[in-house]
Each structure stands twice: as C-alpha cells, then as structure tokens.
Image (cartoon, rainbow over all chains, first blue to last red; front, side, top):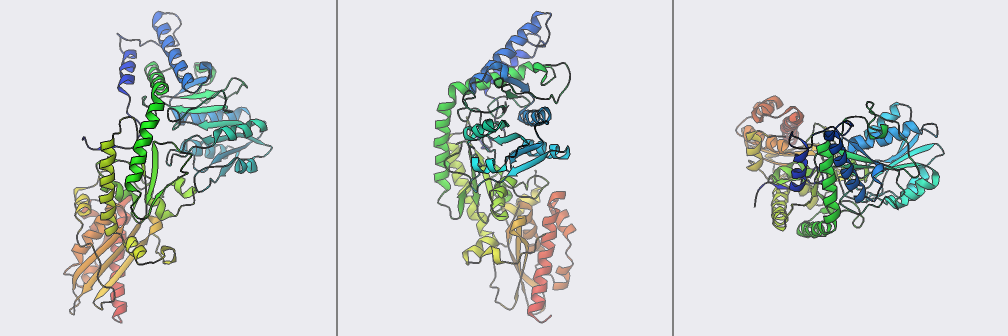
Length: 404
Length: 127
C-alpha cells in the first residue's frame, strides 16, 4: 500500500485521469486553444462550442438550464458574486441578510464585508447537530430581509441542510435564496427544477475537476438579477467578465458528466467505507461523531477524540492525510468555529479530526487508518494529563485553568 | 507545517513521560495551560536533600511542539539545582527545537511549567 493515504477529499480532490486527458486537448497549438469569445474564426467557434457543451454537462447534473450557469473562478467567487450581486441589486427591498454561523468563510467574510457597507446580517446558530430549522429561519426573517444564504453540505462535518424546506419558505416570502453547494454537487442528488433555490455555487476541484474553476447557477424563472462584481468585456451575459478558461471549463464539464454517470455507485461505495471507518474506531472510549447522524453525506466524517489534541493527533497519523477541526496548523490557535457553533467545548473542538473519503479510497487504506488511529490515541492518551484527570474522575470544568 | 527534526524526535520518542506520586514530599508538580487553549502541561520534579532535581516527568496535552518542549525540559532540569532550573528561558527551548513563531507559546508554557513546579516545591517546603 502506498503511503501517505489521502483522506482529505473535502479539501480538494485529485483531477480524474479521464478529466485531465480531456483538459489537455484545449491548451496547445494542436488543441482547441481559441478564445471562446472570438467570433471571427474557427478557433473561437470551436472553443465556444466546447464551453457550451461543458455548460450543459454542469446543468444536467443539477437539472438546470445551461443558460442558468455562469462560470467563475471557483465556489468562493460564486458565493461572492451571488451574495454581493443579489444584495446590491435588490438593496431597495431591504438591507437585511441571513446566513448561518457554520457557513464557509467565503460566505461569512462576504457577509462581513456587506456589514461594513451598511447591511445588517443575522447569523443563525444551528442546533447541536449542525442543522438549522425552518422555524429558526422564519423567526429571523424581517420585512427588509433580501437574501438568505445557507450551505447545502457543511465542509467540516458533512451535515446536509433541508434546502427544500428553506427554499419554500424563502420563496413564499419573496426572499432571494442562495445555496453554497461546493461540497454537495456529485455527492447527493440536486434537482433545481424542484428546489426553490435562486442561486447555487459550485466548485470544480471538489468533484475531481481542476482548481480555479467554478460556476454559479442563476435562476431564469423567476428571473434573478445580479449586480456584476467583475467588470470588463461583458462575458457570461454581463454577470462575470473575463476570458473563459476553456480547458478548465471543459474539465469541470467532464467531471460533472462523470459524476452524473457514476455518483450513485460511488455514494454506495463511499458509504460502505465510511461505515467501516466508524465501526473501526467507535469502541475507543470518549469518541464522538460530530453532526447529525442521518442528514449527512458519506464522504465527510468528523470525529472528536476527547483528551487528545488535534494537531498532535494529526502528527501521530503522519502517513494519513486528514485535517484537524482545530485550526492550530495555521497561525490561529482558535478551535474550529464550526464545531464551536455547535456548542462544543473548546477542548473537544481542539480534539477533532475530519476524515474525508473519495473516489480512490480503498478498504485496505481504511483498515490501515483504523489501526494507526488506535495506536495514536493510545500513545497520546498515555501522555495526556487530561486523560489522567478524566480517569481519576476530575471534572475538567471545575479546574481553575491558567489560560494563556 | 514542517516540524524540525528535534521536534519530531522528541514527539516520537518522548523522554520521561509519566507521573510521580504527588503526595511524596520530594515531588513537586507544575500544571500550566488550559484545555480551551489546546495546551496543558504537567511537569513533575523530584528534588533530593541537596536541593538538586534528580528526576523529572511530564504529561502534555497539546500539539507536537508542546509535547517536544515539555520532553526537552525534563531532560534539561535533571541534575540542576532549583535556582539553575529557574534560569531556563523559553528562548533557549525555542532555539533548541527550532520552533516557528506560531509555536513560541509552547516554549513559554514549558518555562512556566518549570517555574510552577519550583514554586510548588518551595510552597511545600515552607519556602
């Protein structure tokens, strides 16, 4: 077995070899390198045709009209364009926006920027299982609420929000509803003919396509208008200027086409691997699975190993590429804001690991991971003063800690 | 983040992990940090009649650098008098382990742990 084992598919996926093969045909002199906006020659026409095929492939995965797909540089840009673009365009309706505390930074930081520009934002606190309810949202809606943004699948804990019900409520109140579906596309069925979603963000590299490409679904019926955030040649019906990167678009299209063909088999396979992983570690004492058990995608599993610090655990799992719920690996020493928003204690949030499984994960890799996790937990708990205190029956909340 | 070889060595082969009986009169304990901050260090020293630290043990909840810092100080304090141990500086620890700037707090915590253990000893002995 080749080490290290990649279990961080929620961070990014490798490009599928079939996608890379396709992508390479749109770069060199021998390939279709033309500018899709060139109207005066074959090079342009061919590139444009390739882009339109890809647009259809993306639309087909989510049952949308190809004309509703706008290409961007990724889900971060899609979130920015959707939220800022809709807030700007509909500001006369009101300047109140609603989102959730567990959203991706691309949404939260966009909201922060709008606050600086004079908008008011309500950040819903989810239940301890990570889900927001329609009642919570309804209580936060005001007459001047213009945009609601809720992510489909949480990137840290994998829970799936009730987008259908939230969409019904927003539509009934005439509020624009944006959904960040970066972690959802190719992981669960999305039907934009039935979901009452006005704007939806997609990413290429979370679905075995390349980095640097994404898309935003912008509904035509009822028609949603956006104020452009990137100005220039008026590409993408004026919503997002900039020369279209044909090779990346074609690759994202191919990735989404493959997802439509293969995702149901893939979900079954990944679910079995996920269950194998959970069964392999669940008997360790003081281990907790984070997020709702039922409403979740199989590829993201977030587990807290109490009394073991996440970064040292990641170090102990050195041949396994996972990520820590704790942000200790960056300059910040704050535990994950997502886990904190679920009401989890700082120490438990510091003790959390995200395992994300994907297309190339094998049973053998999962079994090796289980073995290494057991060894690591045993070693680190033998070294942990908190574990000793827990074993001695000391309630850690009653200890007078010296914070630093 | 890439760890230095010394951090990895101390992390993979930690020196002097364990505990002494805290009720033993020759043993003093320093516990610093907080679970909420992601670091808790417990350092114990065993001091002989001549005031020399003859043994030390640690347990640490924290990142690899925190574990390495505490492992290192258990080696450093052994054989030192309380006054000498008191002189160990976080900058020495950080330098020895080549800690990056975001991990300097681990060395500060290790220095605090030594000082806390010494203070505990002095308090126990009417110091």
